[in-house]
Image (cartoon, rainbow, N blue to C red; front, side, top):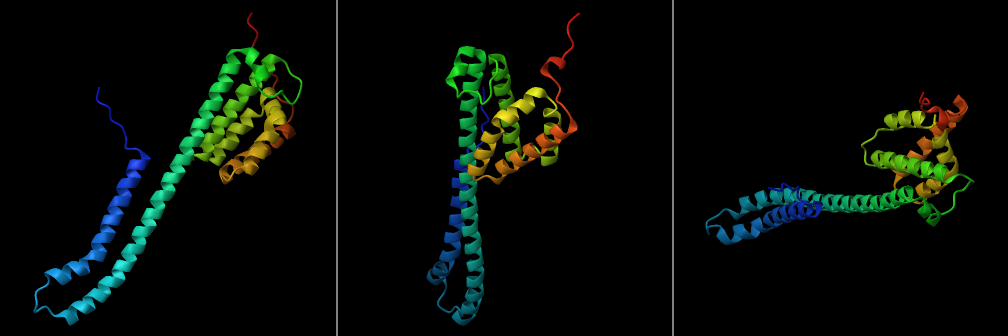
Length: 215
């Protein structure tokens, strides 16, 4: 089957930098090329006036080219960082999924901050996966702050969602403060705000009340 793969960020960056540098070399090398190819009866005074104007433009083009190179390098570094963070999140998610499938592995993680059953521990860990997915979407721009607030308002109506934030919210705050990403800190601030609003609205919906009992 024919594989239609998009070029990697590294290849796109190399191509962009090559084009910019080629243009820069062409601009800077044109005066020397004219000196070699120009006829002997050429009006060099007029050419000098033109070249001065050309030189000023070449400075602007050179500055734009350097800015383009810097932007390309920044973009590549950003994409690399996002890819590395995604790989770490995937690895962490796989470990949690393994623990959810084998309760004996729950004891391999740090002990819960409050006494709870193994079933409740699995529910809290799964809730953490949900919140982590929302944080990732928010940081990447796939989830607006307004949409995040709406989702958290519904989320914190649940008993387990509130318990998760009570036991794990401090860890989220510490991680956000240590992060250089302002979007991560904003996510935690919004979550704290919506959690406080949920508390003020009344008691949560118990997990036992989510579904009707079978007749």
